[in-house]
Amino acid sequence: MKKEQREAYITLTNEIDWSLCAFCKFSETSGSVCDFAGTECHHPLWQVPGHDEELSPGSDCWGFRPKYDISFIAGIVGVCLENGWDAATWWKREDGEYAIAGVA
Image (cartoon, rainbow, N blue to C red; front, side):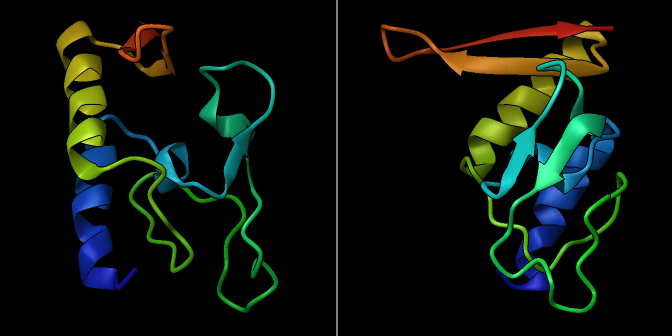
């Protein structure tokens, strides 16, 4: 994904002070389901110079590949802002719809 395309994702994650890793298909969360500080990068090219395994909010990552489409991510961000949540988790229910829970 080109840098210009990542800007929308960076803008959204900045709204809730999260890193891109929260929505990257190469990240895996260890520890608490709401603890993005425990997110580990599993990008197959992680050894390329310039790759940062500990991405901070607002930072760009050349290896970012979205796990979800931009409208889904915008929805998650909107729910977090509406509820004042600092962290959240979501899952697909048996009926195919997503549920979200968070903490302030």
